[in-house]
Image (cartoon, rainbow, N blue to C red; front, side, top):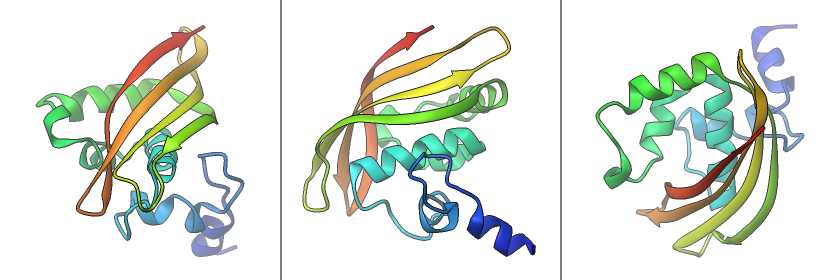
Amino acid sequence: MSHDQEVISKTCPCGSGKPFAYCCEPFVQGQKPAPTAEALMRSRYTAFALGAIDYLIDTTAPEKRGEDDAEILADQVKYTNWTGLSILSTEQGGRSDELGCVEFEAAFETEDQAGTLYEKSNFRKENNYWLYVDGEVEIRT
């Protein structure tokens, strides 16, 4: 199997069941913007799983970005293995909406623990690009 066939057949980390090449890859690679808040949320989960730090920063609302983000994210992706994503609910966040909310659980493992990150994330659309604004986060172990 060639590298391209391998990438195309690899299932997307976001849990959609679709091949990565036809799911989150075009978003994470910057080839096109995520069309919905849920698609952005899934692609950000995928970016955490794959260590795509620039994408995570680029898809965070500018006023929420910090000088240390790249360093903090590099540590997070280095020490955390993301093992599954479940979308619990979405409010708005469709193609014609300006705001959206996605409630989800993301399973993870670190050297010290395994658990679930629960979050209700807020998103907004700016210039046809969805951005992560903030969220209510809870770690459940």
